[in-house]
Length: 251
Image (cartoon, rainbow, N blue to C red; front, side, top):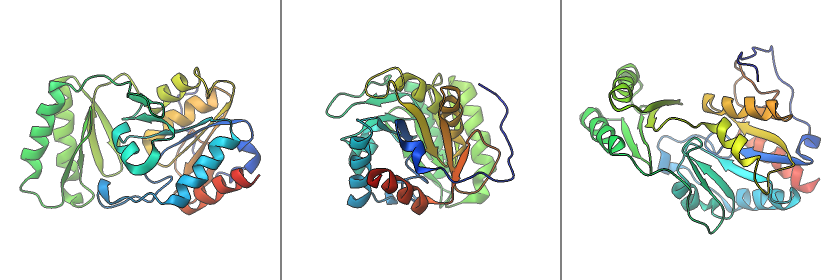
């Protein structure tokens, strides 16, 4: 696997034929649903769920949601019938089965308290409690982004945690996993084994997924504005992703 991001002048749209025989990995926020001001403001409509269920069936079950969200939240959003990886590759779950995840660390609780102490007198900052991690969102108060990043770095060093950079977000979690390791693990298991990995995502946190998909003979699809990336294809926005996936069902 190359460790150098490419900076292409542009990327082509993915052909629908790329989905034939794919093991499909889908990010959620910014990929299947538009980014929202707060994590709980995102809606999942029945049409999206029906499209994903149809594509999963066409692919023989080889479709997984790979997200920074926890598995519990993904299930609450309506994805309980799908193969899931949550918290950036730390959690895994099959439909109707228990979540495979490490325990919540006391250090995460300490970080959560520190985040609240920092955010409580700064309107617009939001602390998001997850099952085994905690995030500090500054989308509603971008002026505090630099100080939030400094705090997250200091707390990660103090407690031996990893800092996950997202869009207007700093998340602290245990290390040792990312979306790339999630792809690698799931590709070794039924029903994904034997498929060609295709990873669709928008965030820098999806780059590891793109890279591993390419290493294993597949490809990444970047959603949104062009940037240096491991992806080979690009779709402009969430609506384009949904249209592309619906073509896979129809085809």
